[in-house]
Image (cartoon, rainbow, N blue to C red; front, side, top):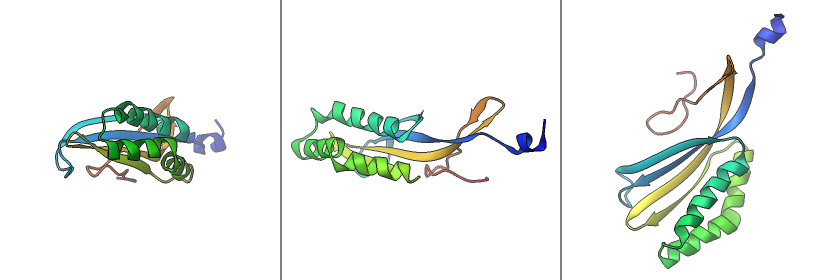
Length: 131
């Protein structure tokens, strides 16, 4: 193998998606967490839009309006723009006394031996570098 081939490590950007449901509006106790990765910003935002749209019919009117405004309007467009700039994005809403947050963070996927290395997240949920 030539030296230039050894130094080249395939790196791509992927998107770390989380949905966290807190037991109360104070967001102090986690009730549920789901995590996944998306291959591109459109897929990541589509997942949030789908989940929010699924909840919309059972939300109180003000939250329904806010949720659908994000889904069908500028919120999801802004989220897509942030991801394309390499910035995180998210959306949150209240539902039956709980607080739900969706976040998406770009991260670099490093392929080693044909496998992906996933990001290491601190307890605050932000990616750590070199630790």
